[in-house]
Length: 114
Length: 114
Image 1 (cartoon, rainbow over the protein chains, first blue to last red):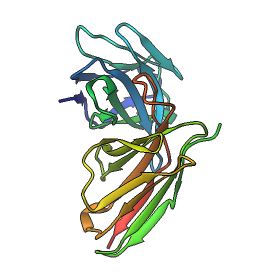
Image 2: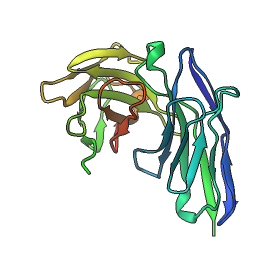
Image 3: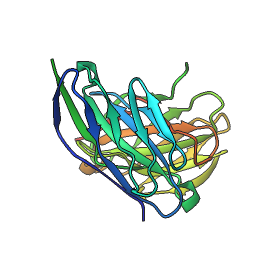
Image 4: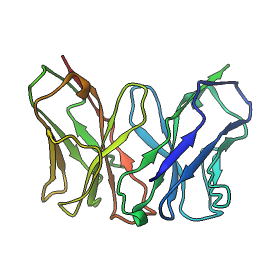
């Protein structure tokens, strides 16, 4: 079946630090990959996506590259801000494998200190 | 831009009662997904609809049912509620069932079963 593994947290960084959140996956078919962000008490917001190997998704200074050879989709940001504090979920869509629903990782709680 | 609308935002029920959650997708989106998120957990896929027909089924209990109406809004009906049903319920929508399409999430309904 499909699965997503990501580092759990909390991950605590100082403002302006470099961020990496690792994400690896297993999938039956050829998945699309996503990062979602969830702020306290809110729904999930799409952060970025990539639909094929070597695609790079980017948004708001965050980026992630679809690496088929290592089945990874690590999230990076060069300089984090306090406002980036949230829970980040890596997810895959494997419609080609017959699954409509997204498969999520457990989420990484990111805390940015001033 | 219009987003996914869910109602109610909060719901408190007693054990063995029933609950109905509503979801209004982004205009022109024809696919709706339902997810359940327990405290500190990742969202779990329940069920999806495409063009008013059930498309895929995940870990939805038999006590729950759902449908999508002619205007594409969807309702999740939950009967014989149990304490373990207390969770955040998210609805998401997308344009078609194409694997590359992202799912856009609503703010969620927080269900508390007492």
